[in-house]
Length: 148
Image (cartoon, rainbow, N blue to C red; front, side):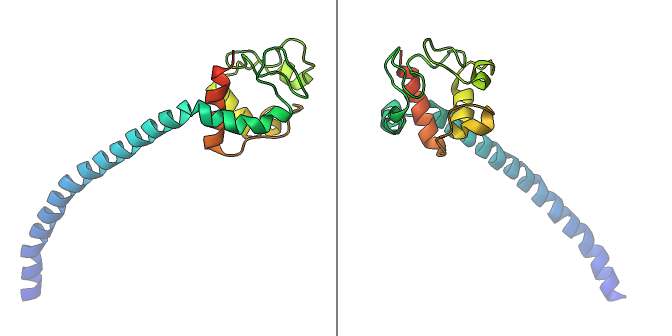
């Protein structure tokens, strides 16, 4: 009987302790989650900005097929002015029907998606080599933005 009485007097104290703990822990967890989300957003924006100088170095691997000079097409089209251009529209290059009809305007998101895995993004594209590393893609995109 004494154990039941002890439990009955202890239970409200435990309930009060749990309630006070929750009232402190839950807002603390919410604050921690908010900090994580805002930090991720800041890092994402920083990553999206990329580094054009580093991108130029990565782009050196692309020069086998692409030129940074306007009007100089190789196996692939010149990428001068690609940022903001419609897919399949560089003058003088014979694009695949898939890229001509894709209707994409090349911006950060579209370039990132395409460069990650071109054949998966636009089925039927002639471009089969991608840039698998996310940081490299962001740097290349930053570099492509500088090409006029």
